[in-house]
Amino acid sequence: MFTIYVYVQDTLADWEIGYVAAELNSGRFFKEGAPHISLKTVSDSKEPIHTMGGLTILPDCSIDDMVVSETSVLLLPGANTWNDSNRSSIVKKASEFLASGATVCAICGATAALANCGLLDKRPHTSNGAGFLEMVSPGYKGKRFYIDKLSVADNNLITASGAGALLWAKQIIEHLGVFQADTLHAWYNYFSTGEAKYFFALMQTLPSNNQN
Image (cartoon, rainbow, N blue to C red; front, top):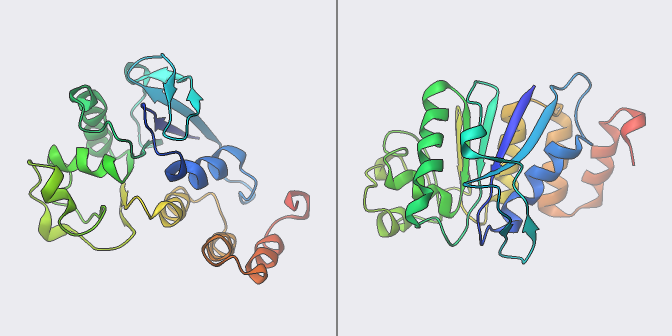
């Protein structure tokens, strides 16, 4: 079983977690025998947070409640508040995840927080374009490992641009191994192109009782 922790904070960028949260929580396209997924929202406290889109989320647990293991995954969506000083607790937890072999997936502003604490200094990664991390993260020293792509997977670290939510979701799903390869291929192609042929290809990869 994988436990997926989604870190939530005020001004969270709703669209960045839409694809990955929906698929991991619903399991609608999972392969037979896929590991069970438990998805939990986590924050600095259990007080409600308000997303950029105006939605209210009541966190399931606090940072102190998180369990770090190789089957734990931490999703760090973007937000306008990643520069706040009280983000240090979740960045420290992200460091623990990476050191223990657990997976960290950061997108948009969350990559800047990791960069500022040196967590991207020696690993392939991406963010919101070349030069962005130097501009917003004074502690960043990983320029030579920067890859100018929408999303970059490096073992248990997956980083993405704010425009890379779909590819980020694909790489996370692939890392977890919960889709068949042909299902994931058709799923990504359908949502990235909108072409009906990929929708029907996606349906054909599924057991008949999973088709909607």
